[in-house]
Length: 379
Image (tube, rainbow, N blue to C red; front, side, top):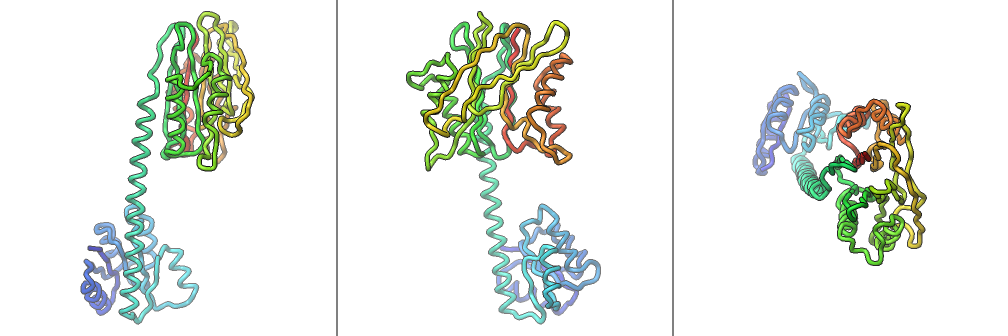
């Protein structure tokens, strides 16, 4: 049964509206002024409020504004009861948040019709809210599943890998993995599928499973460019599938200390090395190549980097630096790289400190996109 709240200082109007609506099967409460009506609304959470405009102790416009400002009453529909008929007055009512108007003297048939319309909108809002909550719960479950299949921390020597993954509220398409292809060579990769939601997460899960099982045929998993070529042939965009993804893929040989890598539209990996003079050297590791899935015949190339001294390699998704700062400006890749170099310079490099610094800049208490960050320490 729907709860309706009547706010009016006229006892005759109160009796008339309450009797009419009660006979229609609604549960009705009555308040004699705006302050009492607001208090009852907070307590009862009514589906519909019918409120007089001109009243002592808070007029109808102020009651409407305060009700609409309360998150717990956001779905409550508000009908403003008024004898004011000018366009300017109606504009004021709409600006205050009123959903409908009812003019005095009250026509009972019109009252009943407007109440039915208001309650239909209320029920629709309620249904949408329930669907939103279900979707958020499903996305949370999906994020939990993605997190569960990501690899655990790898302890050295000769390589130590730590990782952080923070899914956005909508869940994006981030995914990563690292494991030994054989006793000497380690594969490391991170990908980011376009978009949000399950349609972005599902391709990422498919890629993770394919690469882990080495199920792509005729692919040399020791050659990063060949892996990207195989993925590009397998995950082409179509009219039914508009998803593409970026990826950084590398293979490290612990004997030769060579890192072979290739990328497809992904942000560069950042290699931060400690020099003998106490300074740090920063290298951006990236190759030319469009994201996987955009065009069928794309050439990907390999590059080689020699790891000559103790270094840390950072691989990440763009969600870690494409954030709106508290001053309204967009952060960026260059400031993020500076942050990585500074933490290495201070010998305080760890992922939690880096993420704390990033979150301190963020204008929100959550991230708009998935955030993934890998730290590979070569000893």
